[in-house]
Length: 85
Image (cartoon, rainbow, N blue to C red; front, top):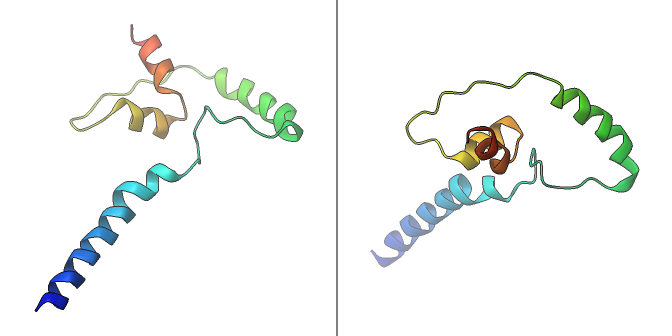
């Protein structure tokens, strides 16, 4: 009986880590990370193309966080706050 309960708890912990913790560990699409110097010139030209686009409208939905919105749109949370004040 105890072994069965321990297996259930372990499964719940693994699911929790997979769903909530691991996505936050990625560095993909985070604007505040600096690239290595050898890629800086190429990335700067790509950023200038990206910043020349018009701003995007987004309607906040229940449960949205500024961090998740910023992450999904490739901008910093500070930039969203600045634009909306």
